[in-house]
Image (cartoon, rainbow, N blue to C red; front, side, top):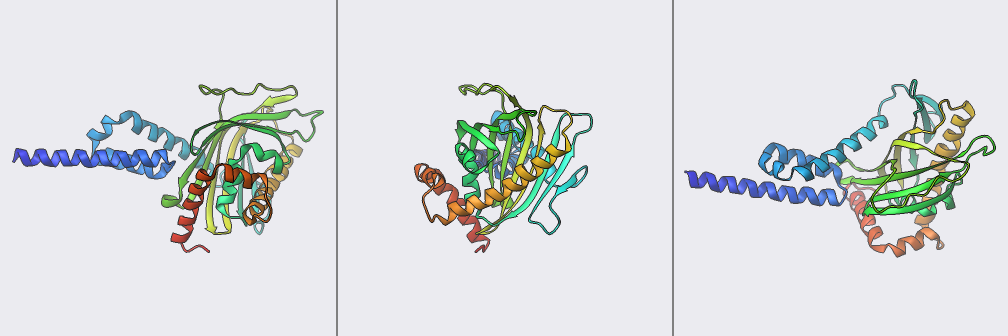
Length: 306
């Protein structure tokens, strides 16, 4: 009797160990949603195995909590003021100030006529931002901690530099592959002041470094050539009260036009009628882009997208 129970316990531990290996693989491949659901299952069914790998399990939970926190403003309308775009438009922008705080939040919802994989190409090639985003004057890739993590810096040109300084930011970004679980890709962004082994640019004259508290971008493929995008972010622009003209500039030039240019340039790269810097980068990083393309195509095929 005891021998049989011992065998059952050993089998249970072995099953828990196998689940941990799967959880690690999901986490390493940036499938965070699958990793955290498996982490919760391990905690429920194999608590002793969960305790054995407590440090890793905590890492998964912290990443999951951060993602959930970042995404809270992607849904719900409490406190949001609609500032641009009508119900019939494909691009709408909302604004929300934080009472008695320098923090300001923006949210954008759009349907973009462009393939998901090429929208991801555009945001992955950070140093090419100034080539298609006119409000970005400079950008640098500082580090690539993992396949889907980036540390970067960018500078936003002021519309009136004589009275309003340029802004820059050092940020950490991570892409989460949620296609298998939730049918989306999630981009998470926040400011980063330091990281071991990374040299951060100094703040230049007539420039103020802003604090991006959080930003989340959810991309949902509708078919092979159309993608739904919902984005929200909370920023301290280092100015307590934003003048109405500046809110309008951010809503129209940064959010509205940024989405239009994102889709337009993604379509251009997707069509591939002539060579361009993005196509060249895709060839230089062929392994990564082959993996990314395969993930998107696999999702589209399983869901009958065309």
